[in-house]
Length: 213
Image 1: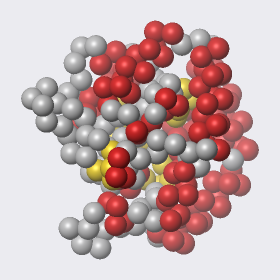
Image 2: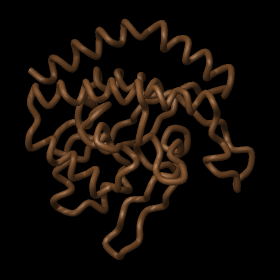
Image 3: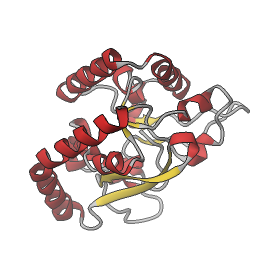
Image 4: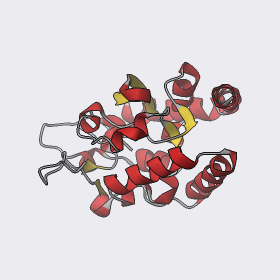
């Protein structure tokens, strides 16, 4: 039933958003050049890897030392603030890689550091939006995000899904939690007390070095 709803809603939304997606694609092509789409490997249901799709929001690096924050663009910031960069993920939903609601898909190099409890977030399809996304997004730590995701998996229902959708709409109208402190997202904490590298919040959208959001 959930999969059928995903297909119906993603299909209808995809058709409705075609004009907007075309305008965004033209704007990205004009401002940033090719490619228009950002593709990155992510871990999905039961850890199966797939290629996530987003609109590209950062320009190509002009030199090796250039930071992701330096590569950010006004267009990219506007797209992320409105979550319009996520529109291509409707294709991921139709393909069966993702659901409309669920834990955000993370990078395989983060997943390998999950403990047994944290791997529980891989028990359902990842989502375009989710409980962690509407409860702090990138402003909260990775352990906190994972706990929100595990709570959602244990308690998901039509009522909870409707609440997530409503809060997602409010977050689009009044964006919050798009970036971590200082515009940089925290790295994933490791057992030895270290963490995976922290990057600009936008890096996941246009750089192979980025952390997922």
